[in-house]
Length: 193
Image (tube, rainbow, N blue to C red; front, side, top):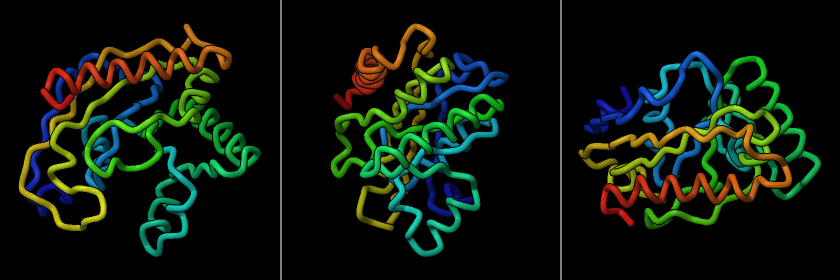
């Protein structure tokens, strides 16, 4: 309904690459408030999001995220961040998939920002597949710092899943590099990079 009211259409490419019967971690670029509803539609499984703890304090929006079971990470407090990652790992172990925006925040101009480590710690701990995703057109649909939507098309481009069992906590930076390269490759294919 959100997309229809906003006059936004979407397409999903390469959805068949993902085994929807097993838990996985989606790692996507983050450029718009439209990213969340688009990913809910692109992956028809039960999943939650790893998100920054400051969103919990936003009236109504934060309450909705809590009610939806989003997992809040306080990056300023290593102990609390570790607890959040452990909670997310338990969700994955119980069969629930998770979406992580590795940039940690929405890009102000649509470019790919540096990645935070939390999602990669989660991937190394759980050993599930990481699904790289590039959202093309989401920035144009609703850029950061605006609540105005523009009639447009958002393409959800799904990369080849990456087996996190090939990585450990000690090699999570390698996983971070490989996921970033995959997302950049998806973006290059659209002419965005």
